[in-house]
Amino acid sequence: MDFFSRRPFLYGIFMVIAVVLLLFVITNKGGATSSTQISESSPGQLLNWPWIHRIFGVDSPSHPASGSVLIPQPPEKDLCLHCHITGEDKGLWTPLARWMLFGSVSLIFIFGVYRSANLWITRSPWKPITLRAAEWVDKRYGVSEPLSKILSKPVPKFALRWWYCLGGITAFLFVIQAITGIMLAFYYKPTPEAAFSSIQYIETQVRFGAGIRAIHHWAANGMIILCIAHMLRVFIMGAYKSPRELNWVSGVLLLVITLAFGFTGYLLPWDQRAFWATTVGSEIAGSIPVIGNLALVFLRVGWNVSDLTLSRFYGLHVIILPIVTLLSMGVHFLMVRRLGIAKPL
Amino acid sequence: MSDDSNNTIQEKDTIPFYPDHVSTELRVVMGITLLAIIFGVIGLILPVGLGEPADPMNTPAHVKPEWYFLSLYQLLKFIPKTAGVILPIAAMIMLTIWPFIDRKRDVSLKNRRLRFLVVVVILLVIIALTIWGEVS
Image (tube, rainbow over all chains, first blue to last red; front, side):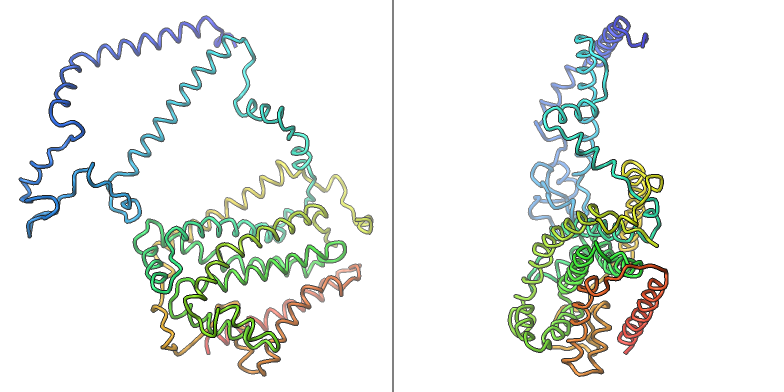
């Protein structure tokens, strides 16, 4: 601790200030003349665009001559807000990354200087910022006691076997589905005219769009498989028995919701396979004895699969079903938490 | 929880939820994330793709539902329609209320083996129907 005592610290600060001043004086020699030269040419325009247009044989930026190279607009006129989507590199990310990196580093540096000076002045013992933040919150809201109670709950060792992870993986896949689904929803248009082409746009134009769609597609299939696997595990091991009956019922509800997610999501690309899969799928629902026609009309919003069906499936897929899933998942987890994991024989 | 008393877990057979259990879960989550990223990279090279745009006037030759409804669809081809629809609904209702029917506590591994056998048979039937539906 002697190394960080106050006197060397003070010398250190003076040395840093002296070095910075020295560097400033050295680098600023003759800097005054060059800065006036820049401001003398054209303010805010580093490149001489009329000159560039002349040597490439372009008459004017808006009407390029035939056969000549197309020159982009000067940067202050062509903001190109969609370049980050379409992949044209107009350098939107580089300045952002630069600002993020140097900005956060300098903020951390300023904060460090402030904290060090504060510690030195107040003579208080040093504590990491995370601990200080936790104490600040705890002093006001008293969360540490219930939180430690929740976190210290003992979990049986047998729950570390891989077949106990199936339900948790299903829940995590739902998180992945939510994230990638929101990403896809930014570019998807739920109308018969635009749905197909918006998916094409995601597949070909949006950066990593094909990858995000692939994750959403495969994780959806994985979620159904893991849901069924988790259910079979619970069934075989008899974990549904008293007192865990309602855990099982809510689990069945979650399986039905997952299948409904799959069914409604399958229509959204609006290609031939999706359209006819939904047609035959809703036909199955239509052949239920008493309420068949009602179910059919509810699913299709009419007697045929149409633009209204697409809107309804989209609404179900992105709003209704996620809300219902979150609620049921919350109930399911609370019940599992309350009763603990069933002990195998 | 009172009837669970003969089945309680000893203190020495447990680990604390945090940090022991959470760190294991975190490893699983990281593995699944890695798997998802691998699928995403594969998807960039080999996209999921799109078929022809939907055309309500033009029915394609082989109309099929999603794979998880394929077995049901295949079943519906061979049994009367009403029975084929009532069967899965009855199965779902049966599945939902199953814990209220099977109330006897397991005393040996015999019941577990029996349930395992039932699951295997049902799964084999469903997989067979799905494959049949896929190739037909």
